[in-house]
Length: 147
Length: 147
DNA sequence: TATTGTTATACTCTATAACTATA
DNA sequence: TATAGTTATAGAGTATAACAATA
Image (cartoon, rainbow over all chains, first blue to last red; front, side, top):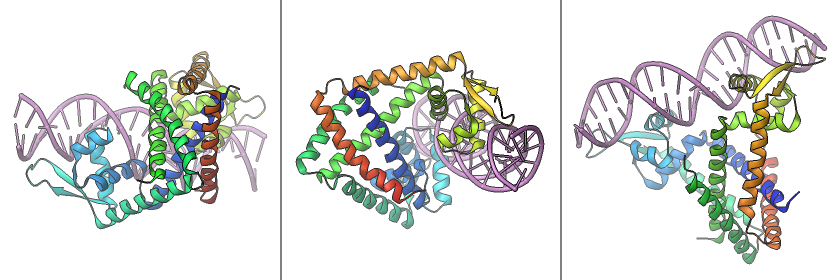
């Protein structure tokens, strides 16, 4: 087996485990991955039009309608009137939605500390340098083959 | 910003870009992620019962029925009789399914070479060591908090 | 005319529960 | 009685297309 393949296997396992961890966290909050992504966006950007969410999450506006419907029904967000454009709605976090956003943020901080807690400073820099090398290639591929 | 958070950000971007790349590849083959996972399993293990696929992919047997239905309809697999158990079916690759499996394998090899092609031998070892440190933590979390 | 968001329709992935055929 | 897979039903995410209200 080539050294390439060993490293590639590690990346694949990393990918799987990171996704599983994220899903566990969201399930605990009563969120799905897609809804959590929308909530996260509103948490960071404040009240947001569905149009803007459609662009940020790269899904159709029809899809945003459905996600917001779900988040409204489960008490995470409300639709508020846009102050100047009566066509638009501003998706806004409820108190519960804000609390969950904050929890997600804090859990992310703790998670990062857990993952990297036993790295020495220099080790961490070396790791980041290696990841950047990979990311450069990946960004290139993404640009070369858009959807 | 803590060094932790920088490294964490790199992992998140890596995760996203790896997933996007995988989806691009599958879409080209006319597969979805789930169907590709099933095909991949059969490619590596040979004709497989739906029961075994249900365990391997960690989804319900009902879900396997649907995935196999889709793969049969699109010509990637067939359902064959089990030689000794008349209740069971053996999901088997068509010629096209085999060809796609082989292509996926080759593309994975090329992909690994692209990602790591400009790493020196020692660099690659260092990267793998760093990833292993993270993976150890992640595996621990996965075991501590099963679904 | 162009934009915002919805209704209409359809496909995929996923799950639970009840059921059939076979072991 | 237990197992392999299906039918029945349901919810979630995704997409395209047609449409209403507003800009």
